[in-house]
Amino acid sequence: MTAKILIPFDESECAQNTVTYVAKNLNKDDEVTLFHVVPDTAAACGLNSPSLTPYFEKERNSFCRMEEKREKMMRDTLEAARYKLIDAGFAKDKVHIKAQPQGKKISDDIIHEVQKGKYNTVAMGRSSTSGLKEFFIGSNASRVMHALNIPVIIVD
Image 1: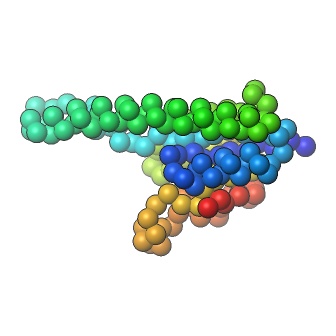
Image 2: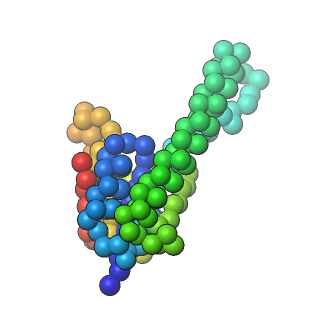
């Protein structure tokens, strides 16, 4: 039986390690989706009000240009990860990329996608937050693992 695997993917080293792990260790007949939640930082680019200071206007434009570059870099990184899986033997038509805007919490977005897409395995990086933040609020990996009743592979 083939599995549907979801890989939550960001620009972290843990996400890259997860793709490498899946490429080396999981069944090449499985279907894999690289799932990227787009952070809500782009909302600042839509701000337009007469009350904004000229300094904020100038800095907002710089930020938005940086955000555009980051989005392009993320698309390129997702595509490279996809081809890493294909080169490892996964069928081209069974490796997908899906991106969506962030809701309230990234972990909730991942859980919702798993349930909606009827995935039966999640493979994800251990952490993309600071150790102190992770200690107090928990990691996305921890929240996903505790919320789902399917195998969750955590990669460092």
